[in-house]
Image (cartoon, rainbow, N blue to C red; front, top):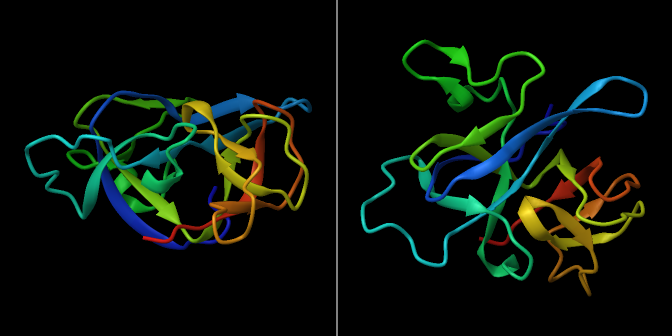
Length: 166
């Protein structure tokens, strides 16, 4: 669930994104959803994405300047429905990977659950980690992609305000 909606755009996968929407069991046995960061590719495909947004790839460490947002919710907003059947892209409790050419929504400038690429303390300024995660270590608010609203250990989901400049 995305807690507060910011800007919602549509992206088309320029490369495979493994478990872009991750559903995992937490320490209390509850299944929780978290979402990966996406970036504009270093080299975009030659064809137009033909979506209300652009081509995307999984976020990666050192690609903060290419950051676009975080993959959207599994059942809402509407673009994460299978357009031919209007069914959600996920079965209940399932993670979702995106193949080249698959369409997804991504969000920014909102509060959402993301994945920790390292240990996170509440209040940490965030930058991109490996495999679409977020890590602590942005040096100032101007360079930060977000702020952690709760603590998390590496691999856990946590709530964060995620922003973007362009």
